[in-house]
Length: 155
Image (cartoon, rainbow, N blue to C red):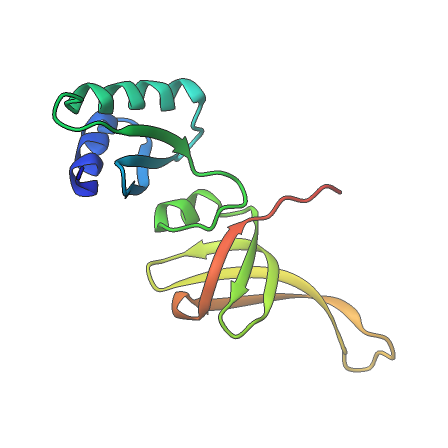
């Protein structure tokens, strides 16, 4: 069976010096290989094709047959790496908490331990009869976050 670690090493060597990075490598039974990549800017299909060809050229079909798919981390897929979080700073994200809550907020900061988000909610304001929109800033430890993905708004 083909080794996922070896595939990751091949992919990372091919992407050295670019803004591409490996998000995930999976090898299924029957040697179905899936390499998921992302970028600090944009992942075009031409970059996926070039990476696919480079990986395939590094493997020996005579030794093992395989099916290779190189794809970009898509919008709506959960973020897995700090680098992906940092790419979305200043943009809206959807955060699902392990406790069951969900927030749509602007990502302000991301570290290896926590993310900071900012969002608006209606809250009681002293001296006012009606609730008003107030801006909240909240630091969420990654241990409390089930998933985070880029939020698409069709307003």
